[in-house]
Length: 197
Image (cartoon, rainbow, N blue to C red; front, side, top):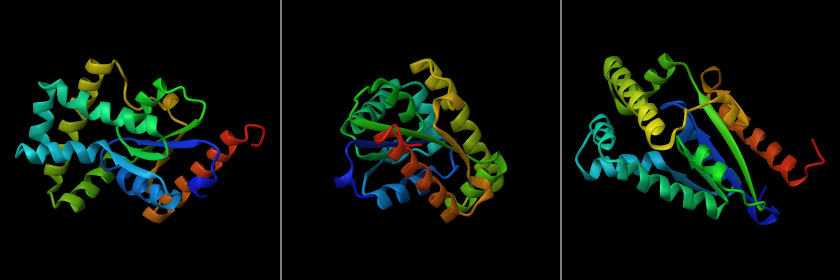
């Protein structure tokens, strides 16, 4: 499905807990559909590195500096408005609700995996011990949930906010990508041609 053959712009929004597979799947979907890729997480990590902080340290820092979230989230909103993009972001699905452009098709997918699976993935990815990975997930997710509620009055990951929720723990990486691609292509077709289900 090439972008130039579509009648509308596409915005695909991947959200979910850390280490649930968002980045891997979002990058693959963007490549397969010829869409831009944007990650608020990558921007967050870049800013942490610029300040010489670990992710846990920077997460605590951001609690006291809301301008960091506002800057990152403002960029995400602009990416949504441009269209033809896959966003890997905790909050992009929430901000996309503000966009009511009839020429944009929005698809929101939440990826999920049990905590133990996510800890093991983070251990492998970041070369951490089990306790280090568990602490990073706990600190970041608890603080983000509280911070986003305070800044935007949003409850993260309400099922009603998503088109589809995918458990990524019971399939290999390629199967998850294939499933998400099939879901996205079907939803695009349904929303370009509302009469066809």
